[in-house]
Image (tube, rainbow, N blue to C red; front, side, top):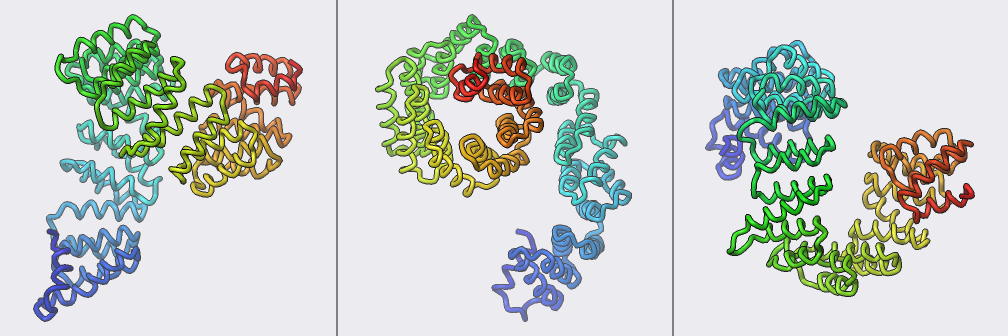
Length: 546
């Protein structure tokens, strides 16, 4: 037990007269400091702990005083406590970490450089160095110090240290340093799969697809790759749009469920039906004649689904005996029943799940969502709303149920009800970009509250600037306000990010409003190919006389 805690416990149990005079003098400020810290009064805590350190010969109290002063960002008290700590424990190397944090607090890069260098020479010192840089109050100084450590070859020959400093660069939003580290790491650790994977990730981010592929190919020929390493490399091959190579990278992983599931996904993306059949047979052959684990039964069902064999998939799922996997399998069975034309049986199963006393509350909630989703696929918006209504009776404050009901209300032209649900969601979670966008877009598209809608969408855009849906909403709001020149670049970018029928219809409408009729019709034809029944597509077609 730390001595500090012992002091505080004994203070409540032992008469003060039994304490030494030194401890009696330190005890009062020590307790004041701890109470202030618990109450969140950092300045008062730092002052009290500094006084306790002055009165005590215990280095642990001085260390605590330094930590609290640094937390309170009080440089003067931190310097005073650190000096006391170094007097009481001159061999304690942890004091140098405090000195580094003090230099960072004071934005003193000159003082920080030798402290950082010394810390990086210590075994595992890079961990504390990375933590200090991430916690620095001045990111610019921290970025300069991290770059200095790299430029001066101060990082130890430890792949974990390099990865940690990559994390530092990301946290400090220094993409240039992150990329420099990534490009150098494979040269320092040529036989480290993680180094090559990092190099490949950076190359892909920079648009250097050939460089990314070279790094991945180099990693894949390394001996003794672990399953996790192979999964990472396969993910990156998938990002390079080579799902066949991604699947092949996982073949040596053997009969592991995660590897088999990932291979199935990649083979499906590659359109390799023969490969999927071979994988199914391979997984089947790897099963023992004795009791098959539920996880493998679930995998076999998923593989059968990918092979578009719903009967086999349901047969596998029905063998799953217990727990969360059984509940998840029942939801999959409901989907497959509906897909094979047994809509009533699917609905009966979902109602059974909804009224069960399952310990998996999320599964029960998901059964309502799934019933609504299946109703939507059949074009039955009233049944969709009814399922969500019943779900909200059981799960009154569930955001997913309410959000989906708002979308269903909008499709049913119950705009006031949709707005009411969306307002409730925004009031409950005012920083959620999807709810802000949902409400903003509905106001812009279906009501006259255009300025309010635009304000909500702008806030959503600030929170999630790369969302195609939000960018489209922003452009559509500007269009509805007659600001088509401003709207065009937003909607064009949204359509580049996401080839969606509704976004395409919006782009066509804006182009037409700007007199660019030929391009508008070309974009509209593309939107029609994506979804000819989309309401926005139909509306723009009518407006253009198509």
